[in-house]
Length: 263
Image (cartoon, rainbow, N blue to C red):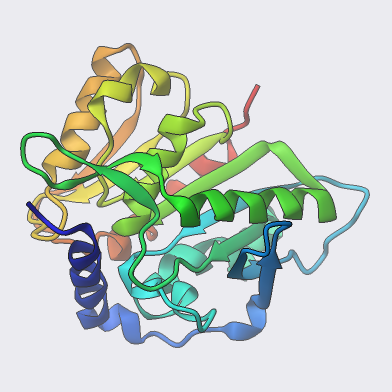
């Protein structure tokens, strides 16, 4: 049986090795915040607010769930290291000019994960249900909805690796919460596929992924399609685990995400 904490540690180490992880962070784009709830639980997170924010308008929000390398308590790793592309693709001047949005990047604590669950056959981690840090991240998101003019019909969730697992677990548990989901190199629970037929999903995986088996994406996508859904799925035949270097550079991705709106 694979220990989930060791598994996610390995994913973080893999992310650190990629040359893209050395790309410079732009901390001035994101403010460092700390959320504290009524139970005195805290979570560090980074927040991007559109530069032209106008209280008279409503804005979409992207929830970014980092990979294993983003964990910690420094409120930085989740938008740097191997997590730069997934957190910053939404904040580029070009995208903000055309599609201004909020971005929230909570930081998962060390030795914890975004989701819980294992495949009963392979014992590989599968995003079955949100773990405590992810439930706390939802509280952060709700707090932002109270503080800012966030459009509840345009909430989007995306994550890679550990965050990909978290993305699947989140939409399986709350299938009506998000207007679209973009899980990268993750794994969903095929038994929950019937819940996911209505939500727009674009999943990505590398066929040569040695950290999270590509079967994790193949199986949930096939199950959703069998249940009557029409998710998008991009599998890179020569890619390994770091599919974020390709997925977040797909020219259709950002326009597709912001074209989605909950009913």
